[in-house]
Amino acid sequence: MTSITADKKILIVDDVPGNIKALSAILEDDYKIIIATSGKSALKIVLSQTIDLILLDVKMPEMDGYEVCEKLKADRATAGIPVIFVTAQKEEVNETRGLNIGAVDYITKPARPAILKLRVKIHLELKKQRDLLQELSDKDGLTGIPNRRKFDEYLKQTWYSAIRSQSPISIILMDVDYFKHYNDNYGHTSGDKCLKQIARALIDSKRRPSDFMARYGGEEFVCVLQDTDTVGVNTVGEMIRNNVASLQIPHAHSMVADHITFSLGAVSLIPSLDSTPEDVIKVADENLYKAKEGGRNRLVCHSIKPAEYKILLVEDEATLMDVYSSNIEEWKLPAKIIKATNGVEGLLQVGNEKPDIIITDLMMPELDGIKMIHKLSKIDTYNNMHIIAVTSLDHESIKQKGGLPKKVHVFKKPVSLQDLEKKLLDITGGVNQPL
Image (tube, rainbow, N blue to C red):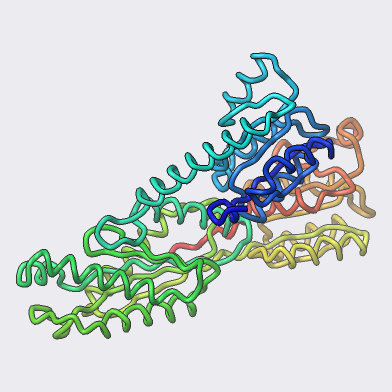
C-alpha cells in the first residue's frame, strides 16, 4: 500500500461474498477496503466514516444499487462520493440509468483488474481536484477563513440538524469599530493586514472543531456555535472581543480606544420550522446595531425562548398514559403535560387549562373521545387546538359512532412513537417567541 493512497477508503457493496472477495483482492494492496453486504448497511457506513469511493453492485435484495445511489446523491453529506457500478448487467439501458442517477462510471463483471485499478485511480484523482476547487470556493480570498457562501451553507445544515435534535445554536455578528476611519488614515494595505490578523484571532478563539468562523463581508465577521445557549455564546463572544483587543492594533482615529476593537451582536435559540436562518441573522444584526449605539466595543446578546405549549393527554389506561407522558418529556418538547382519564375530565381540563394540543383515546368510559371532540368543536377556542386521536377502531367504525372532524389527526394503535414525536415536533417545533 503506497503512502499516497494508504488513507483512501473504498467501500465495496455487494450481497455476494465471492464478489466482495474478488474486488478486495484487486484493490487491497493500494487502499483500505470497507465492505457492506446490503444497501442499508452501506448507507449507515457512509454516514459514520469518511469514504472516498464506492464500488456498488446493482442487483441486491431489499434495496438495489440504483436506489442506494439515488439516496447518496440526495444527501448533501454523501453526494460528493464517487460511485462506480460494478455489475453483471451489460445492457445499455442499465448503464444509462446508472450514469443518469449520478454514478461516475459503470463496470461490468467480471472486472478486469488493470482496468478497475485505473478507473478507481482516475476517479479518486478527479475527486481530489473537485475537493480542492470546492475548498478554494469556500474560502475568503483575503483572510483564508470561510466566506459568506460557506457560512450560508453551514448555517443551513446546522439549522435543520438543530431542529431535529431540538438543541440550541447561537450566532454572533461582529464588526470592526470605525474601520472606515482606519482605512482612510492608515491605507487599504494596512486595512487588509488588520482584517487578516482579526481572522486569525477568531480562529484562535474556537473552543471546539464545530465552532464556525467566517468573513461575512467587508469588515464584518460571523460565528456559528452548535449546541450553545446564551451563557455559552456570551462566554465565546467576550473571549472574541478580548482576543481582538489584545492584538493591540493601533487605531488613533477610533472614538472608542487607541487600538482596534470589536462590536458584537449575538442571538441564541432552539430553531423551529416556523422560523428561518435569515430571521435569526436579522435579530443578530439588530443586536449588533444596539452594541454600536451603546458605545461600541461591547457584546449585546438575546435569547429567543421557545413558547411553551400545553398538551392534554386523555387516556383511561394508566400504562399508556405513562408511555405518552414519559416520551413527551424525553423528547424535550417545549410543553407542559396535563392529564385526564376520561372525556368528562378532558372537557374540564380544556376549560381550566386551555390546551394547545389534545391527544385522546377514542374508547373511554363515561364520555368517549369521539363525543368529547364533538363537544369541543362547539367552543370558541376549538380552531386553535391541535387534536390527535389514538384508536384501534377502523374508519368505518369511527364513522358509525359519529365520525371525526377533518382537522383531527388519527393514529392507529399500537401507536408509532416515532411518528407521534414527528407530529408533535411539527406542531411545537420549538416555535419561538419574538423578542
